Image 1 (cartoon, rainbow, N blue to C red):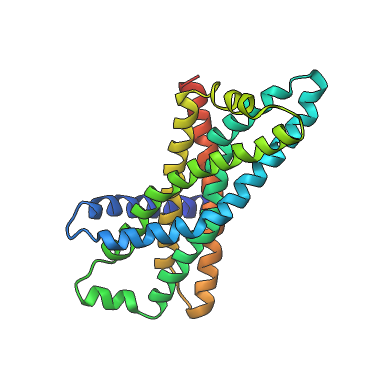
Image 2: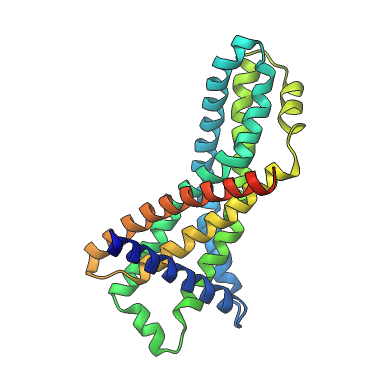
Length: 253
């Protein structure tokens, strides 16, 4: 048990060190803007469809489940508020983080892990190219830019999904639904989701890169690292979500 705790502490320390190096090298020229833009495209544009499906069906299911209970007390109108606040504060950032971790985090690990086992990273070092600057920073910055934007996108798609149920199943007017969806929301609801999205973005990119740099054992090692990257990212995302939810609840009631 004590050995596992030490391993966890060492792993988190390695992530913290990679985070510090990534932040430092982000401000050191040359600034490779094109590489950041490429990562933005890979992480963001290519994930729009799956985010659309996940967030849309989440909004539909959430509206259906809440309608089952709220219809008993003739409070169907509050479905809009429940869906919008749930998506903004919790479901939007979490599901977006999990989707990006499973899709992009695995790709980052596989790419860097392949470079590691094929000694391409050693070649970069011999050419005086810093691997953190060249490989990690573009993915780190790209994630920080894209994941919050995808979260906002997921929020609106989820609200629209809930609207399909409320408008066409429960008979709530379109104008009343959107009024009840956005009127009860406050700045804190939106801010909470964005803070979580930034944290999840950092977790996804750093874990993906860190596992890639640790890859050993050829193609089999790349597979193990990719699996570990996804699993660890999922665990850290859920843990961070719990932590920040508690922080916002107790410090900003």
